[in-house]
Length: 270
Image 1 (cartoon, one colour):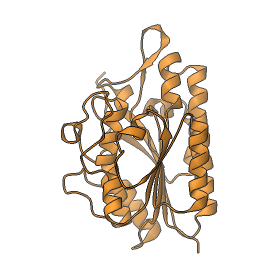
Image 2 (image 1 turned 120 degrees about the vertical axis):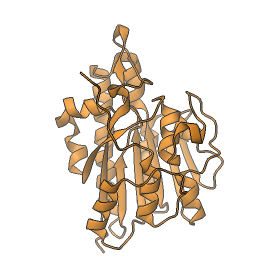
Image 3 (image 1 turned 180 degrees about the vertical axis):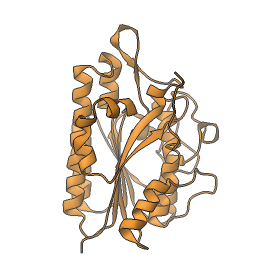
Image 4 (image 1 turned 180 degrees about the horizontal axis):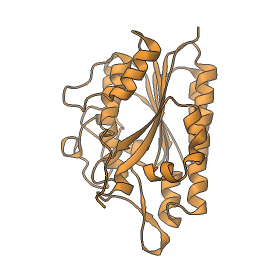
């Protein structure tokens, strides 16, 4: 049976978020995801988004959503859209997040293997900064998102564990200072590599990610009633089981390339 790959690439994220804010991006980036922009038009009319929280749990494959759909019920309940998305090759974390937040493929942004140099290519953060917006990254020490987007006029909140990351993300929502907040959790990826994608330990980590996304959404909906908001659950790549019951990724195969994203467009209430 032939493999089936999703058609909407995660490189569309940068231009999509820029368009929703009314911010210019480069002509070189992938075109916006119409499923999201058309939903925004339906919810907001001619108005624009003025806040975004992009949650990046690592390694959540589409097949996990297909096989364990009920486990994603909290994510679905707080979202408008569940969109099958396509990762990039090689399907490893720094390559994928560089592609997501530059809007271009690895041959253009330059990270083509598992390495974490500071990107020199324009990113979503650069487009926002040029437009006078405030950006923040909340992540764990040593991880890709904590490293490849450094050296920009924005704020970085880097911690040793995800509990501190998630606590800080909720604090930033409460403070309501930043236009764009990106939050990274690598717990499922780390557990999957050690115990396998569908092990009890890995499924508990995935449930933790889904629960936190739900909490994040609830706080946004409660605290940001005066804002038009985009928030999303946006993994970078999938995963597959290898010999010995461990997990891996990086290959051009459905399990690694097909991922699931959730998005919500929230209209200001006041």
